[in-house]
Amino acid sequence: MIARRLVTRTMSAGAYYGFLAFVMIAALGPIVWIMVSSFKTNPQILSNGSFLPHPATAAGYRNVFTEVHLQTALVNTFIYAAGGTAGAVLAGFLAAYPTSRLTFPGRHLMTVVFSVALAVPIVGLIVPEFFIEKDLGLFDSKLGLILFYAAMFFPLSFVIQRAFLVSLPFEIEEAAMLDGAGYFKILGRVVAPLAVPGLATVAVLVFIFIWNEYFFAQLLTISFGNLNIQVTLAEFRSAFQRDTTAQLAGTTIAMLVPITAFLGLQRYVIAGLTAGSSR
Amino acid sequence: MASITYEHVTKRFDESPAVDDLNIEVADGEFLVLVGPSGCGKTTALRMLAGLEEITSGRILIGDRVVNNVAPGARNVAMVFQSYALYPHMTVYDNLAFSLRNFDVPKPEIERRVQEAAKVLELGEYLKRKPKQLSGGQRQRVALGRAIVREPSAFLMDEPLSNLDAALRVQTRAEILKLQQRLDTTTIYVTHDQVEAMTMGDRIAVMSRGVLQQIGSPEELYTRPANTFVAKFIGSPAMNLLPSRELGLESAGQLAGFRPEHVELGNGRTGSAHYQANVEVVEYLGDEQLAHLRLGDHDIVVKLPVEPRLQAGSQKTFSVPLHKVLLFDETTTHAVGTAA
Image (cartoon, rainbow over all chains, first blue to last red; front, side, top):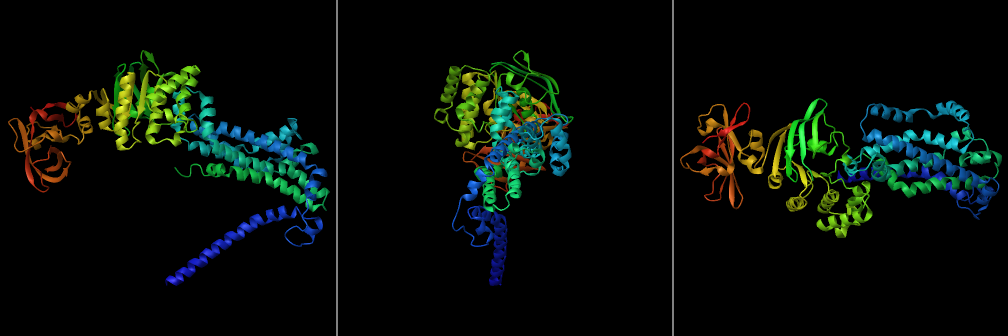
């Protein structure tokens, strides 16, 4: 009886870990393949030969900067991601604080309206966004795309930061009030430092989303000087189809930035995403 | 320093009164304890004084100044919170200096006041630490320090000892008292612990369901409670209350109240009420014994010298001097005098 239970338990554990291993390989396999293959020559990639590059070459990385000028796209993407993130985080914080900490008429309605924006299908925004940007003279400009990203990720920023702020104790702010701090001083000197995990969570997520964003970048920018890295890589694929090595090198570079950002700040991200789940 | 006045102060949350027509005058330099069970409105009364809750009606004065519409920071009061509410991202020094910087106090003066508070509260070696690196008692002292550096008109303390263990609580209680006497600053101290109230307050205000039941010196509240609520709330073990006829008193419609320590074993002297009761449980406390008695349908607690030892299950005669028996109207619960 006990032996049978042991066998059943071992089999269940085996199936469980087997499933997890499969999911992990499915998730990480393509990423590892891209990184490794970016050091192969084009014939090596196409020949379906060994997994590891033999011999290894950095030609793809050289080509992606000399032929495609990926550095321009990298700088652009960084500007979009940093600007859009700053806008979304700041606007989200300024909206999340009063709706989570103050009492005023319309607070709940405001919270619902800001949050429900998350449910709007992105594709539905194509036409209005295009005309808004065009009418405001922001089409195909860096500022236009930054503002668009800040607005696009505002609801996500609002929802996460509000969940975090709700869990902060009120008494600290009350102590600051009695200590003579005004609204903005409380916000900047007391609440914001305590909300760092929430702010960091939003910042990392939004930065990564904007870094990887292709759809609206392709819709709202056309000149080479304004393209982001995703659009540049996609256009590069159609223009230089045969240089697969360079394409994989470009993809590797594009992946490294968000992966590094996430690994560096994952402690905050996990704290922020689980805010309010326990006391 | 300043006097504090509550004039017909009422606070309603969704139509139900949390504080109902509160009238209290606290003299300059006085230590007043607001005491009562959870939900009695004592913290709400304190928070209204601090400016953290709006007043539904009435007036609050600090000195001669009505502060109903004055912002919390402009009332010149300092509050010690139950949770201490220290700024976790700031050092102890910055916690102490935060309010002074907000009020644009010159740097040398900030330094002087912080160092002085640190010296008084023995926090000197912790000034560079963050609150999470301190023990509960040290955090509590930082919270006190944050209040005293302000040199405010009044200290408001909301159950500041409730997070400390029993030994530290007794020690800190004495430290707060010494500090208050030294600074001579008007203090309003909220607690649900009647021992704290009795030992600390110049006067005690007892509240129940938002209503002030009685205000007076600890002795006054103990010996002459205004009603059965105060009689039961002040004193540990609580005052015994039972219909007066159970003690053979000819006062219909009244409750007789007597303290456990006023009971004697035996028939007692002339002018005593006596009764027979079953001893149910005896708690031996070393220097005295607490006996839980059953008299008819009523439970009675008596505090007696340790000898002769009572045995559970026995039946004994007990007596209480009539001048120690307080009478309360059964309907209104108000005190009507003594049985003597």
